[in-house]
Length: 592
Image (cartoon, rainbow, N blue to C red):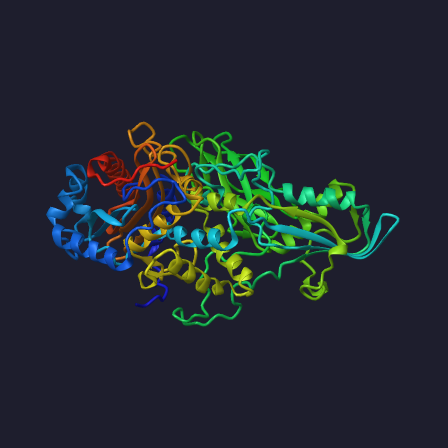
């Protein structure tokens, strides 16, 4: 399959592509969930289920009995999912699509209901994060914390450091920028990382510079009042994207992580800008922007237009100075959040740290702005514990895992790969894949049923089967952290990317699942090819859960509104399937 970039389309097609990008994020937020599968209690001693061979036999028998076909299931197979679900599946928009559904009783591995071959590859989208976060939790541990130390490289005398101050990046995803007073990591239903694509994105209330402020206070408390040297960020924890990648996109040397993570991350390496409408014909009001770090500033080139007109606000895609806000904002649009990517994260962090030191009473004898002087760094790994003057310690990794799963944090999911590689003794983020493979084997996943090239589900390689998905979900039910893992997933009608779905339906609070979306433009006729997936747990009665995976590939939408309609239909299926699950029988009881 060719992965070459498509020829640039005409202007209408370019407009469609931009709208499609908006849709992708919107779907991840709006999509609901559907499916159910086996049931099992949140107990450490849960049944291990049947063997791989018997599981395969069970799936094969189910396929034969229900008469499933390569096109996504026969009429008989669809009818077994209930008339409401069947009615949705038979709509014209799904005529050429492929459905897959697998519902398993995790106490014994029995297939409860299914549609389509359980061992077929599908395009998953962000449900891939189940396969990247899970091995990271297993390999690093739920309680793993990231320590970001600062070292004084020189003599401290009479409050003056004659030498450099070095912060060694640890791969901490938030550096305190989302940590609430109770130690948890905050998130909103639509994360700020989606602000340029998804309507309704909002900010968490925490200070994005909180970790650096804490470090600066510790430096001052150590006795340092002045640094007669430089301040540096050591970001050599892992390698960055290849500078000279192969021109062959099929080569293993091609950069496969997008976005490619960095060892130092402050505010997701973004500048947040919140604007509100002004008077028609005038510039909008800048309500807030953060983090305020030199030399960044807001340059307003946008205009307020009449109520009802389209809002077309954009910001500089990347910046190392002015954040340019352009386009229009409708008078009735309310507050709008947009983000600009920081072009040089180490330089950004260095400036932010120097400014934080100043706020804590530590002066630095160098200009705070400019590039990070990495050439002055000591030999990697040569730091001595006696020179440590400060350190920021993160919340447990489980908090970051929840963030990634609840809001579908793409950057964090890709960062997980780099963190696994580092623990394995490598600086190459792609050395995480052997670690992931070992986890899949441990979880009982047939590794021939998975294919990944990133952690977020955004690479064309990413594929897995419904059977593989349910095996990962069953694995966690056999662990002491079963309940913790389940509650990391978005909860229908309650939080995360499912917060706005099923707010008053009977399935509210009973479906715990990760959703995924890949929506692609068809340049031939201007329509959209939509791929939706959802997988997780649904409660069939108190303390009893099924595991499930539902996916559709190749649904056809005329426009964005049509694609959003598909999302709503998937939500309807999820609610219906959850409500019908208790009638399927075979559920195991909660042993807690």
